[in-house]
Image 1 (cartoon, rainbow, N blue to C red):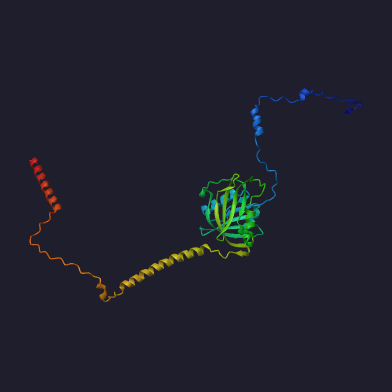
Image 2: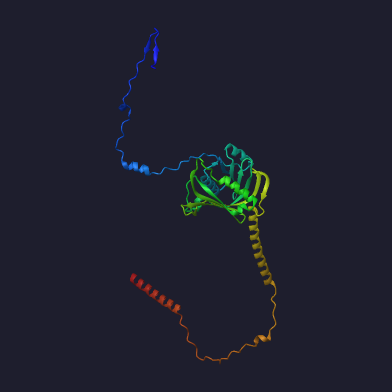
Length: 353
């Protein structure tokens, strides 16, 4: 049917059809044959980069920040952890006067469900809190033997944002409190799959080893297919203090009986040095008393002279001639020097006249 338009006079007017274009006009212009064949071959051989086709489901976000009063090494360690964990977030330093329960509100504002909080005391002791906000549990550690990435200068290296493999000591499965810490560490340090800031590669390993009732953290690079490991850094040691049921507080689930506070450790060292000083002073006092005591004279023992052999008596020689005096060479040199000096003086005075 052809579309028609009705005029006011009632007569139907047939609309004119548009002329069709020729197929030659419709076809696009032919491509220029100036493109070299080498470029086409290079594009065929080129391997496309990895494309993330999955969906980001694990929405774990870690808040990493600290209190005021930390030193430079703690600040560098905190920055290293942020670079190793692409799913982490930063925040300003918290005032030491504020209570720790405020951190749960900060995590809620930052949309984070895990937290690593560094607490500094006396400008020399560093404590680390690992918490599942806001319901718990949480663990408090004393951080020892800190070595940052800039300080170590290891030969290992890994891609920024790549996902790590978490390696745990078999001792984590033997005791219940270590099993709880293992689950907490897995949820905090493992990078979620298909995270927007992460790279779809696995090229380094986080190792958690239990030795001397402490957790030792190391970061290694995986070299190619040989599975050889080269350390990257950072490295630190976590000494467990307590595990709480809530986030930054609540009932105590576990308390480490082997833990010794830094204040107690310093007190023991001072007491050891003081004991050494006291011992030296006592030895000196005993020596002074021995010197003041009268010496005991032992009686002569006749058996001491049993093996004494008398010396041969030499004949006495009487010298009748006076011995020649010894020549003093120094005095002789002085006399000769004085004579020469007088002669020079006379000669100079005669020339002057």
